[in-house]
Length: 449
Image 1 (cartoon, rainbow, N blue to C red):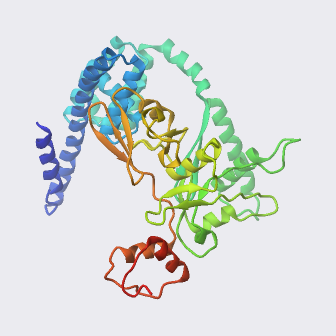
Image 2: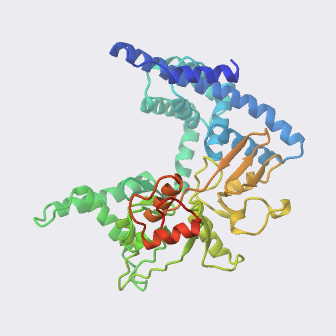
Image 3: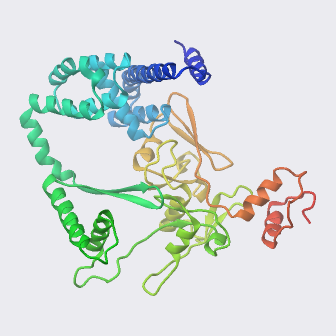
């Protein structure tokens, strides 16, 4: 099938008639799930073929082997609208399925398993030799049609431990070095705080929190649920200072909100860097100072026409900390399209060596991997007039990335909506702030006053 033929299939799927019997709807759901799996199998084959073609070409052109692999993974990630990290996972999965586990690949092609289950199999066998992987492939490929996600993981792990018991034991002993704590956003202004701990420590921590909750349950004045008591106990234990330490923990949050939202005159959501949007009342609670809390406010200015963040109070561009704070507040996450990783480097979008200027408009926030990748052979970046960054890959494909829109006051949004149709008079008299915005935007329309 050509690319045009694949596009025609996509168009046909978009026009499928849902006005059929319920039995037919279930049959089509099943068939479409098989289509997804077959497409994933085809993607694996094309990914591996691209990797085997592009990698030696880059190396022959003088690229370091690691840089060449990084370039390949980033290109695959962009093509699949994923981050470079996920692009690397796609490349690794493709190589495993095509060269070491063809039985699993055939099951995926037939629609008998999913891409995620194939990924689980590759992950659980990554440490094994090709011979052991071949044994597992032969042993499980014909059974995958009846396995769910959990069964696939359990059976594959059992096979791996059966074939390499000493290696499994060594990996379990070394796993403690990977212990860590991570955080990610949750709905409704909450976060998931996750600990990866050795099993004995994790069970002990949970058991102590559970014991505290059970003890509180006997208190007639206790109205919290067991989960709430456990969460509150965890926070209390972690944030209680040790002897000699400050009584109040230091916390730094970067919150971007409009001045009107700060003054309780607007409902535009704020944006917490590293988290996302927050309701205006919650944001005001975060910045409401008390006797024990210091709140620092830095003004950040937006372009009156586009509303994009353009500069800050700082007048010295060579102050790296302020510049980094501004770029992090503006870009939120890595500027590479589809990446979404935390910003680690404040960088020139167009390198100085290629004619770029040291200006915040040419600055962008990048993760470490993307910052290294964009300077590899065949890659280029260009800053457009509207601030968008266009990334061109070695194959000539172009991807455009823009920072998220900052919070905008209701007054600004009203002015822009009126300006988009100059024949429509304002529905209500303009406020003083709206009149000033109109002057800044150099707009005229009937009834503008």
